[in-house]
Length: 115
Image (cartoon, rainbow, N blue to C red):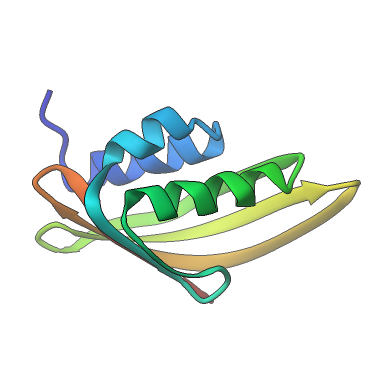
């Protein structure tokens, strides 16, 4: 089934909200990269998925809400999002911007910036 870059980005956010690492891992290519001012730089699929597992397992609940999603250039999707996490009754939230670069129907790169 063909998925547009926006479809892939939405699917990634849905899988992240479910903490479904099987779905997440299938979206990345072996040479994918991930950069976040909050968590650092990660190279290759194994490093990215391991970081995400550690991140998700630190919290009781995580939720990303897409506020806007646009394909700014062919195969480059920008998502404005609000993020909430709960840990031991503490709730923290922030807004951010995520760029997702798609190549051959896989996520090639993610870059996350706080707003």
